[in-house]
Amino acid sequence: MNILTMMWRNVRRGAMTLRFPARPPVPSGFRGLVRFDPALCTGCAVCRFRCTARAIAFSSAKTEFTWSYDPGQCTFCGRCVEGCKTHALSQEPSCPPVYLTIGNLKTSYTLARKPPAPKNGAAAPPPAGDRTKQPTKGDAQ
Amino acid sequence: MNLITALARLLIFPGLLFAVPVAWFFLWVERKSVAMMQERIGPPFMQPFFDFIKLLGKSTPSRSGVDGLLMKAWPLIAVSAAVGAVGLLPVLPSSGGFEGDLILLLALLEVPAICIIAAGFSSRSLFGEIGSAREAVLTVSYNIVFLLAIVSIAFSQHTFRLEALAQLPATPLRYLGVLAILVCIPAKLHINPFSLPNAEQEIYSGPLTEYAGPELAMWQLSHGLEWVAATGLVATLALPHVAFWWLGIPIFAAFSFGIVLLLSVLAAATARLAIDTTVRFYWQCTLVFAVLAISSALFMRIRS
Image (tube, rainbow over all chains, first blue to last red; front, side, top):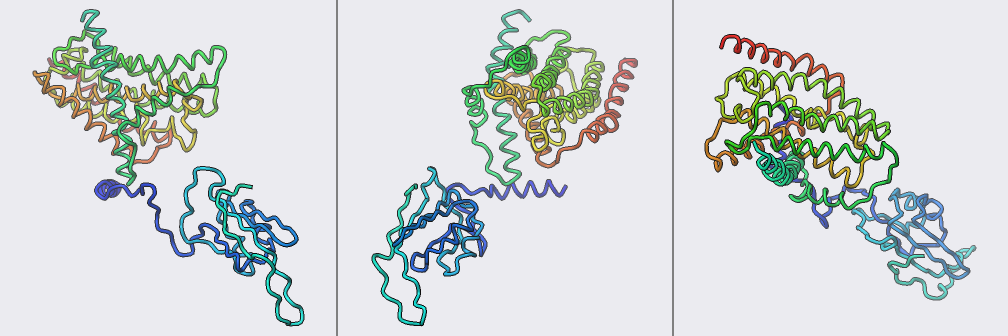
């Protein structure tokens, strides 16, 4: 009889399903979209190395490098965030957004390479060129 | 019953034209009520119709040889038999009928089950064969009780004519028989706890695993028509006779709707039983009532 009571309670309470675009609340520590802070990134590419889903792509030149991230491929495992020593990566505590086209959520950053840190504690020279560019959405590569 | 009346009953009311929308409605009621009991939204009102149209528009993989022909034929035979069974129901008072139409109705109600068994074996799928074997065992199990219950009702009231049965005053024995029929209907309609032939978590759709497109649409329609025929049969046997058609039809529809809701509650409240438990249930528990009903019918017949 317990099940009948439960079913009756369910009927009276109504549906718990959320209609789109409503999203369910997430617990603290939820691993959502990977956020990128260009100011902290050194271009070490450890995140690309740790990303088994190949959601993070990295291409490097002499003076600049490009970091891109496709949430459509991401499994939100958080290994890139764990491996980022400069804490340039973090994860949003919210559900990833819905996308209708492959690569629609892809973001790409092209940054100037930082000069190597001085060895004998001397003051660091000023960075060369533009440091960051605005993220470009839908920049499928 | 002349030819025109028979065709009108088969094709218009309560046959094809009336029964198909009612079948979709019953399928929606079942899905929606189960969803509500599980805190889900459930499908919109027109969903069974949309499913049917969508499946009709899909192409099916071509199958050559006898198997391909048989796989196309089984759902059509099942739909035809189910429409025939619905067409025999005496929804309207003084709607005709003939002596022995109850036997024809029982035979037609069995045809979809036989078609499903044959379809599963024709598809040559492992899941289809397992599902068909389960369906065959289930059919043998519940049909003993189902047939004994109906025969006892007909035997005690001296007629195998549906309309006469509907008009005769109900006896306690008839209610016992209706109860036994109600116990068999979940197995006939493959709903929980007797949904083992199409246990989707174990064997996908069982006998219908290899079906797609218009053929699958026909199977769904046949399933809906089975709902209409089975609930209509119970309504015919359980409801008191009403002289006015304008009162009889709403009562008939409301009662059938109530049975659909009752079966939905059962489906939502129970889990699937294993095949041995199902067989034991019908052969050990329910058979006692059916034997009791038939022996009471014999006793009443001897006394009268």
